[in-house]
Amino acid sequence: MTLAFSTQLNNKPTYFVEKVIFGLEQNKFIDFNELGYFFGEYYGKFKEYFEGTITNTVAPKIHTIRRDEFNRWKAGYDIHFVINNRTPQRYQFAPVVKCTSTQEINIVYWYNPKTQAFDSPKTYVDGKELDNTVLLKLATNDGFDSISDFYAYFKGSFNGKIIHWTNTKY
Image (cartoon, rainbow, N blue to C red; front, side, top):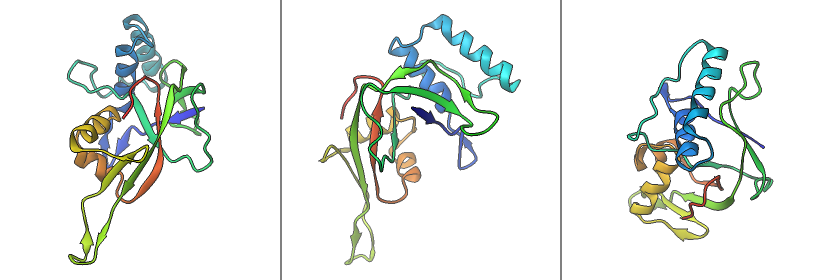
């Protein structure tokens, strides 16, 4: 199944392509020599280099979070990592890997009638509330730089799945 990734969010580069490739390399889905192939193919298609640099200072993206209203994502399914999906510029930027597992994720914004405002959001994975340590790990493993960036993207209550291609669990 296709997993499409944004290259920009709020007029800022996401570096998701680079982070996914770095995560695949770290987890031995792709070796260092294959990196050159994917970077060369990208340059051949778009006549530009990746914006980001893959170094040990970049946190790898090792899963993604998506709505899955029809319960389509399952362990064992092929993952095709793409950008510019459903356009003539569609590009698969990494090798096909298998979905290893999924986990339910719920982000809840509670309205507090006493303060007449929304309290800080709470995040639950498989029904368990995440503390800030685990939440930071989830956010960075999903490609965000911080918990605040994570919540800036998920601005309201959200129900979906974490789609894993490694053995990480929360």
